[in-house]
Length: 116
Length: 114
Image (tube, rainbow over all chains, first blue to last red; front, side, top):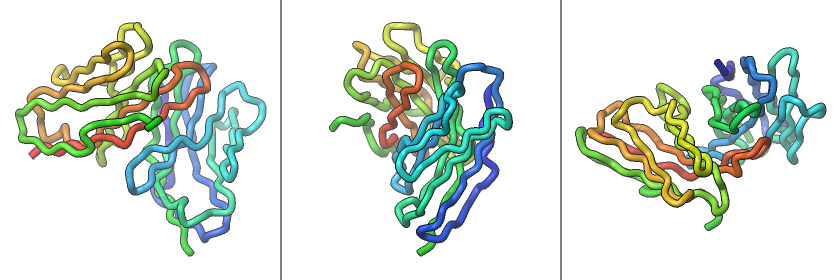
């Protein structure tokens, strides 16, 4: 069975600094995808970044990058130059991509607070 | 709008009543998903529709929950004989249903059972 673990219930970061949000996963699938979503207090789930299990390079999207270490089964999100608007819940998720592309399995999330 | 649309945004009902939640996916997306988000359980998968295939109902918590998707577009999640533990935010998402494609979420329906 697939499982996502996010060990940091809450994190604080100073504005303009970088922060790493941890995510480890467990799966027996060979082909899978890893996703990060942001959920502000308003409630919407916003897709941030994707990493495929066979991708050789770490994914980057603007200030977001994914530190993918396949052997360690970790997919940490790095946010550079934090902004006040980055304060939100962050969810790591995975999906089997070897067969039909089905549902996401989510971690419990990390609440990030950016301090001015 | 171009995003996933859910209605109502809030629903308050009495225990034992039936409720219907609606999801209008992004135009052209073949895959549609329902999730539930609650404080105790986090984000849980409920049901998944892909094109004309039979839906994956493996996440539905009981036979009081059902969903349909008409014409490959709009979906309705129905909860019969609601219980207090059904109180949660119900999120709908849609995607192209292919590898590497993210799911795009609606704003959710906050369901409160009195």
